[in-house]
Image (tube, rainbow, N blue to C red; front, side, top):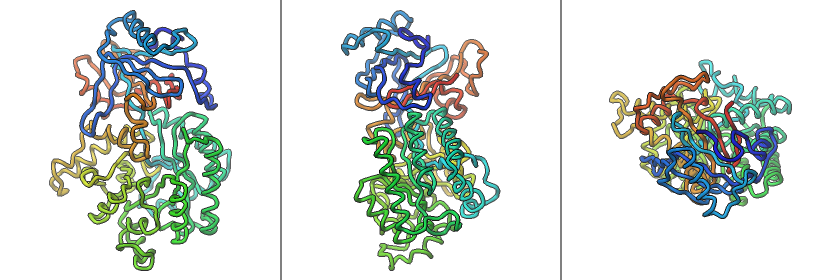
Amino acid sequence: MGDIGFAIGQIPPAAADVLQGRAAFTTHPKIFLGTFIHSRSLTELEYLHNAAVAVDAEGLIVAIEKDLDLSTPSLTRSAAHSLLSKLNWDDSSSSVEITSTNPSKSQFFFPGFIDTHLHASQYPNVGIFGNSTLLDWLNTYTFPLEASLQDQAKARKVYTRVIRKTLSHGTTTAAYYATIDVPSTNLLADLCLSFGQRALVGRVCMDQLGPDYYLDASPEDSLAATEATIAHCRKIDPSFGLVKPIITPRFAPACSAPLMKSLGELAAATNLPIQTHISENVNEIALVKSLFPWQEIGARDDSYAAVYDAFGLLTEKTILAHAVHLTEDEASLVAERKAKVSHCPCSNSAITSGAAKVRWLLERGIPTGLGTDMSGGYSPSVLEAARHAVLVSRHLAMPDAGGEEKDKLSVEEVLFLATRGGAEVVDMKGRVGGFEVGMEWDAQLIGLGEEEEEEEEDQGNVDVFGWENWEEKVAKWVYNGDDRNTKKVWVKGRLVHQRK
């Protein structure tokens, strides 16, 4: 069935602008018809078949209708026109776009993925870890690459590639780390806005524990540079509708006490989000304890989390990446401060950091999302992170790991983490991550392939035979899917990716 009605098969002008790298802030109203799947709760997916969703020119969902008769193209057109009439929308071909799923290709609309932790500047190193652990890996691979992106041409190439690649995998929102360089960071913000990806963009702050060629000169310089990137984001997107700055101390060992204190004060003054790393590696934890005697900094104990808390960096807007080795007391502190965790299972495995206990975090009331953590992680796909989260949880549940059956995560749970859970982590709960009236249309059209016959086009690794129920189709997608199944992607109602 595909696109029906008006402007069949065409990318709308506003979306075409985005695809060409020019931001478009409004677009045509849209009506989507067919099957919609999203998380109703942590453990339950809601399947809306024969439904219609209306999205206005600002990208807001304004109506959802269920139990329609979409059994033929003509009835689908009739349902669309009926909804147009109820909304008093002009039904001319130039004003409303209508898109429907194709049942024979097992198509469905799904919320856009939210990547709560990734390093845009490290994308060229994806898949390159050597045999290093975290601290060696930073010095061998990471710092040299990040420093090289002071070259604007190189930075543009890297950032353009990572934005396009993540969009192609259905990532509609990304929490990015850039570099310490202000122009390079500002360029990442410009490109995210240009391509239409919703993004948190952070200039990396670090004034110690790095090579001489890649350090902020002083806490004062680091703060001033951070304020410069905040001002730039406010200039290009005053309402932070798509691109928002995020305060980014790299991690405690790379930041002096004066720097972290000033960043905590900046966060309090601006009410901006914060992102950093915590308890990724046991050697890192020992280093934090040696660098920050807890009595001297006024921390409540000698834990990693207490260091951030002492400097005002543990807040309800804080994203803590990894949290592999948190103690019970730290989890209590994180929950008390309402901070969030980005679970990065691919990276934790690749760099031999450990296995984060997601069920344990959730039971303690800590909101959790998924992060690809490129280039510690090897894939730009949040779907890959979701399947890896399932596998890591199953290893934790094995008897020799001392776990329990309840430690296992389900398909439904990891898809929640990838959408609604991620939305809460990036402080966008109720705004994105699901299909409800009043939420913004950040979505992807997923197609799993023909049920009856083979197509010439490569449909990917998900084989659908026609007898699977929808729960089984979704499970196949989680375990076997990739970007070939992501046919179209919208952010705030604008088409930002379309597979050829």
